[in-house]
Length: 565
Image (cartoon, rainbow, N blue to C red; front, side, top):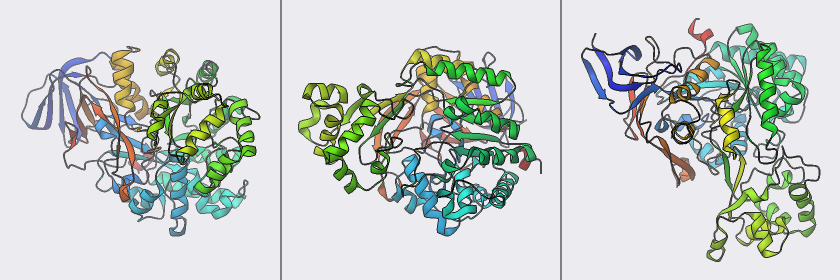
């Protein structure tokens, strides 16, 4: 047989978790046709001696919903070996969308996921109304493959209008209309549904997301649609407390008969032992046959923010109206001594605020950058340390510095994942799903694209917490199986030829840098990859040596119901 692509002399890590072997992988017509010691001509041959070849990595939780319309590569995902991205998470989506609702849906994405609104306004190429139309619109000239979840907030907005953010209970008729939209979206190939339980997720107008005010019963009822159609997965943002207290995710899993992935399990600064009980709980549920899986991010959550754009304080009741308000309102509030007392009571003393809402670990919030030269010596110091050195209260030290710099001071907060022994256990557990990059979101706070290169470089090569074969399975086959993408995630004949060639000895996450490459020149943070030689999508080389080849071979990854229709 004449191959389109032949990868020779590689360490073949096939995604199953089985031991790797030294051999070749052959591709024809976008599919893997064989692996082993192969002979035969090929249009292109890549000598991968000293490198590993694996199934393309899957980013199972990101927010490229708008970006994909102006950036079909979903940069910088494929630079890190990602060949399939899944977005529409946390109830946030841009379909269905009437023209008059476009700015509202974009405003939800902008505020919750910290994507500059001006970039969304200038860059999003709206051409759809319904979910099927959105899937078809993005399924043209894609770089990476894209899987899409149906977002509860968008569906609720379509059916209930402004009431979706003002009225908790939907009428029986409205519920039926929502279910009909979900059926249509699933018939068009959506991978499943997404919900959100975060009480601090507001849109750009300061209103809670539609999904966040919906009662639990609505989530369970909508989940049941997946039982009807017999396919799909459910993702739910900020839902761990609701599963642990009330078993909400378990109820959704039982109503749908489908897997439920929820955010999230991690070592937390404010409750460093809580993850142990959570993991034991998840293990018990899964062993009962209830498919509920907490997601775990291999990267620590290090949030860079200023008081102009911070989201860290949104869930505290006295902070929320200030943080979702205007810049002028923030300046006025933060200068008011009486307001400061109230804010300090919540954020420092913890009055009415538990650790799940805000950790109060001011020793883990430090100065990342300053606008004034005289304040440069404060860089790297924690707010707690600065307060002690200046003889001030913690909140006064924090606000005084920020106000002195017109709220331009950059702070860095370590919130999740800071204890490596705890995180190693979570990453190894069969009861968790690895991923949760949040790529495409929080662009002004952190560069999220590189969960895969960080996982393989830091955790596998440096910390050696598991074999490379198991690690590859965790970010390929596991997610492909969970999301019902049964045509990828393994190096097997007949599978989509989504592949990555990398150097296990050098793969790593590169340094953080600022780039002004969003629409309108808006700035975001990025971190490129080290040690990734080739990213191959559907048999075509997409990224070679860190550069885009010009190919656009990606496709929308659609569910099995669509595939068998």
